[in-house]
Each structure stands twice: as structure tokens, then as C-alpha cells.
Image 1 (spheres, rainbow, N blue to C red):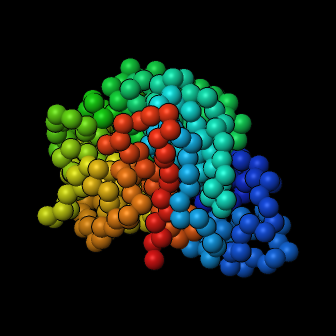
Image 2 (tube, rainbow, N blue to C red):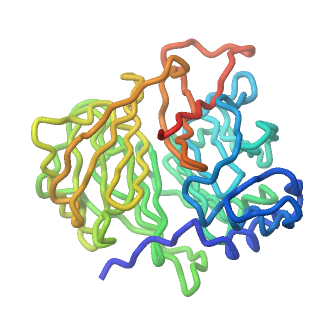
Length: 329
């Protein structure tokens, strides 16, 4: 049976993994926290409450020429990967301050996610590979050559990390050992069943179904959403009625609600799924004047965070990039 994904909102696990003692004591005014609460107590409150009442900047500036694509968060921290050279940038969502913590290999870093140990699982894009990076120190813990086409996005579960490939009809599967230990073992799940490989970008964003039994994968070109059996790669098209998720990129699921970044459409689709993700309906699409090709999504403190990849802008040394905060209410 496919196990449920590891939950990132486990305060003690994340705090231990990331050693967040540097967060100032006045940073968070979360429900239940008092002005005298310690930094660890305040962050723990924020992680337990999905909509803590805190003031946060609506835009976070990234380094010039960074060319972001992926985002992942844990508490007040966010990490971003650079399409330009693979650097990993870490920022504080409270202040917007940040720094490059890991120098890239010269090939892209695109989709990424952080696990409860504070490890970043990073998709290598055109490099056809992936790597695991310590989210605190930036140390590269492991690299994996999948010989992929365009390794795009990633989701981590108890026993595996799954990476989509936008140019091949496969999902790359990295096996994890007891307690999430990294191993040298990986293989491929060939996408079949209802899956249709077409010209252009195909498999892109990936997450898990609400019941934890399947993977959800969006095809950027066709706009179809698929429920994929993680044991054999059989893909079942999710019934979205008349809706499509064209240009679907990064995805974020919370319960039965799925958020999908539709990059060049400059919008976020909110999809309501049934428990097994056999059916779903787009219940809302949202945009922002601050969007310029939002590619991936993370959530914190009652808002979505989306890096703007600016695909239609020719990158120069002084090209600006930023992250848009989109309140949910």
C-alpha cells in the first residue's frame, strides 16, 4: 500500500532538522502565543495553526538574474532553486531577507521539496538528474543521475521520492530506507493507461491524492490531471468535467483542495477533489497584478507563495525576480 506523505507541519521534527533558534522572539504573534513566548514556542504555534494572524510582506525579492522556478517552505523559511545555475536560495518569509546557501552544479534546479529532516529534494531539469541538499547548511548529501529528459518536480513520501519527467513518459522513483535514509536505489515508473504523451512539456507538477494511495500528476500541454498508481505507473484521468488545467505547473494539496499554478496563464486554479481524486472541479481561479509567470506554490500563514519565473523576459544580469504572496482570504 502507498503510505501517506510525511507531513511538513510537524513542529518538533522541522525545528530539530533546521535548528531555527535564530528566529527573533518578536517574529510571530500567532494565536496562543504571548509576547514572552520563546522563538521555538512561537514557531510551533505558527506551524500548528494553518492561518496564524501575522503580518508578512506581500512580495519577496530574489537575487537579480536568479531565474527561480521551485519553492518549498517549512515554518518561516522558504527555499528556491535557480534555473540559471542550480543555486539554492533560502529566505525568511517574515523579513524577506535571504542568501544563497548552496552553489549549483551549473545546471538547473527546478522543483524542490523539504522533508521533515530538513533535506531538500531537488529536481535537476535539463541535467536529467536530482540531488538532495541539507536545507540548513547547503551541503549536497547525494546526487542521482536518472538519465532523464527534463526532471521537473518532486514529492516525498515515507518510502520514496517521486520525480516527474516532462520529456519522457516516466516518473523517476528514488527508494528511501528506514526512517527516510537515503539509498543508491532508483527506478522508473512508465506512465500508461489513460496517459497520452504529446509534443511539448508533459508531466509537470506532482503531489499525492487525499487518501494517500495515489500520485497526482498534471500534464502541462493537455491540461489533464491524472491519478497515478505508484506501484506500476498506471494513470487514470481525473474527471474534471469541462475544466482543464492547461499550462499546469507546480501543485500544492491541502486536504481535498488542490492548488495548481498555471504559469503562462498567470493564474492559480483551486480544485476541489473527492477523497480518491477520481473526480474534481475547479471552484476558483485567481490572479494577481504582481504575477509574471508563477510556476510553483507553497503555503504559509493563510497565503500562497509563488515565485515568478518570467519565462517571457530575456534574462539579463540585472533582471529582477520576486515571489508573490497571494492571501487565501
